[in-house]
Length: 389
Image (cartoon, rainbow, N blue to C red):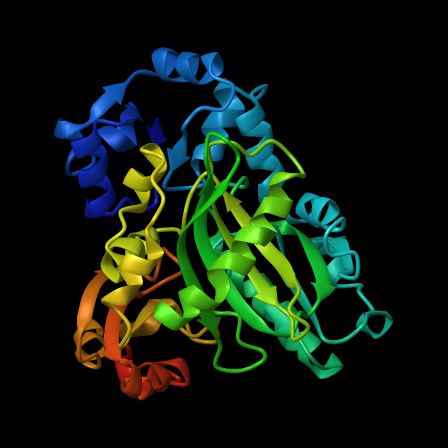
């Protein structure tokens, strides 16, 4: 069963849903999609009635906007309570304190930010919304002199994101402040199967242009990355599975591995894999259809998948307009950006005046051509931007 919601559903996901005849909640939005005529559309009463009849239903949504519908029609269900729990980063910190007791955090309201004395906090730290999405409202503070700029940036993002996402997805009224975690940041798409066992569908390292960078500029993977992290992450997920009932539960997890080898979770996005079109990278990078793997409870044969990709690097680029610029006065040169890459696998142009990103692009290079990715990672993007007079 699947709930397709705003702001974006890729053609690949739509085609998969149509081909597999996965029951789709019939809404005005799902009925307006390009491939809706081929969907197995199910009305509200039947859809949510079926959800209520199963303890651990196979449920997926492309968008956390669907959380509102779960809270409206079936707030009592285990899946709804689990989704709400993981969406709240402060509650998430509570449960993960059992695994990572040395990670401190502080919950604070927007009003309290203006009065915050950061000299009382351990630097460096990260501030982020209690409920967030796509790096919105996330900032790293390394020095006390950073705080004024960070606070101004948060308030600017509040205005830009007003009415873009529902409060259940992004809320800039409550924040958590937590220790800045050193180490490699890793992103995975995975699900716990009907037996509560973790199945990993994707492993990406999240690269940053600087210590203060919190953007989604570059996620990268390769056979070496998957082989290095797969088994340790699977063991870590088995520990998470002991904390609560997570059977038939798809999720996107971002975490860091500290220099001592310990994994520290940053966030778990419940009921979905990576947002917008980004979960489709599993298909473009590995030949894995993540939606089919989840609904059919399949497990990747990583040895065979990676054998044919031993000389490649794969990059997912999420490009946003620099926060200090006025988006309404900026023109982004999509064609020039796309032409930078020697082999583009897929891209989606987005309306950056309404959404957090200008473009998502998936690319492939030989391992000796990492510089092609690195150039974009450290770019100020000025070569792709013009200002309207």
